[in-house]
Length: 124
Image (tube, rainbow, N blue to C red; front, side):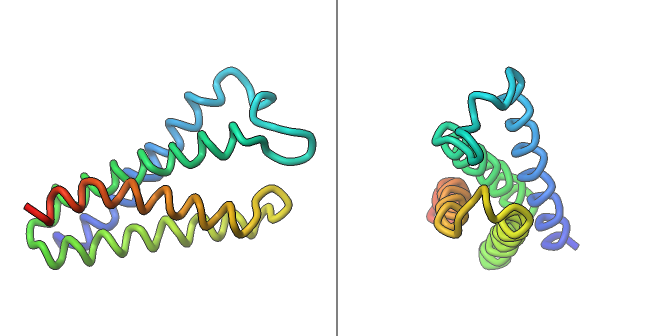
């Protein structure tokens, strides 16, 4: 239950942080983030940073819940896969707003967010 709980709570932490940051950033309105029919660079910048912070939060939750190193690594990969699948699903819902390259860069941002605490915890 320890690993499954870490995966579930890590994923929920990432989603909650991402939604919270999205609400805070777009509080002033989405007009700044749009550029005609598509999204502007500011939108993708805030989205990438949001996924980095969300990945960081998810990794911290997983590493806090799962004590064994090998299982923590498995749980981190599982949560990162769940987040990646969510990004792919979001891209498939509105393909005119986000290219495949944008989705891959957002996945890289989430991976960077995961890598920082994972490296610090697992390398020690």
